[in-house]
Length: 440
Image 1 (cartoon, rainbow, N blue to C red):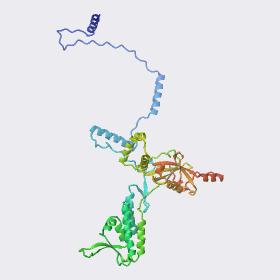
Image 2: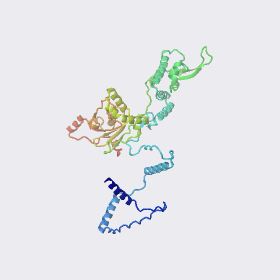
Image 3: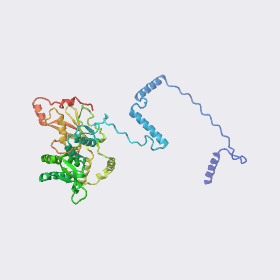
Image 4: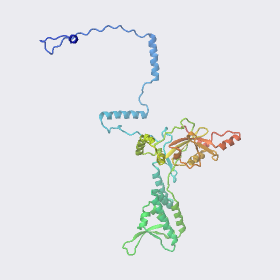
């Protein structure tokens, strides 16, 4: 039986091998190919009816209305993006990594653009009243102090000592030493001349190293002179108090008090107070980069901390560990942008330091009210009531880097208004602020 099936398989294989070939034929000769059979003739299809053609045309018209044809770039931004894409494509083809438009950082947003909630962080110079950008404040304050020397050299030199020297401990040590020098003049009025040796070790280590100290000595009546030293070949420099200054010891005492009580001249944060009409965009804040106190290294660290969040949640943390994390979160922001929704729906906006207290916001709102003597309340998101007496900073309340609060009259005020048979005024801002109202 097995042999029978083998013979059947061989016969089928032989028949399917194709036409045979004689042994006398060359190997390169091939058997003639059979002509392919003609395909069956298909019957022509009938065209669409008139009704079908009209329906297809109507559907195509609707589709074109919903999907307008793509047009080329019409704005400067789209044109710039198109050029950048073409430059990147050319760089990819040429293989030049330094070709224009390849691997470039995104362009910074322009200040004052309409989509930003505030153009940036600005400061006010306390000496000139000028509004300064964040990167201008130190240079402009230095210029203002130097210009003040022409009108009041004593005050200018004191401001220079406290402002130009950043090490507060070194400044305090130098100021205390100068105060002792001036006190000695009152303790020893019998001396004809009071002098300070410039090369003295204490003077060099505590006073000479500070900016503004030499200008202060000259402004209060000291003069630098060369005096001979016993048992020494050459003279040395001394600060010697002039006769006119010795005749007015009370002025020296006044200058000493000025020096001891002075503070560094710092630019104050400009609130940039603005009033907006009622808007559904009240809780949307698009902030500039100035509001975020994060360097490139800190951003990378934040990314790493996010990846470790799952591990932290799975590990029990001590109270000290939780407090350190909270402190790190609070230090993340330097400024905050706050909006207060008033009873008429208008929005009062201002810029604050993240470490400022809640009382600063109450004072800011009170300055904008017509009746600033009436008590009111401020409510954060979730109905949290902020008390003016609380000694909490904005970053401790979670009001960073931006927040929307709600204005509400004090309960006693509302009760008195209703008892009088009247309704609380919805327009509570000063008229000059309402005249400058903006659209958000």
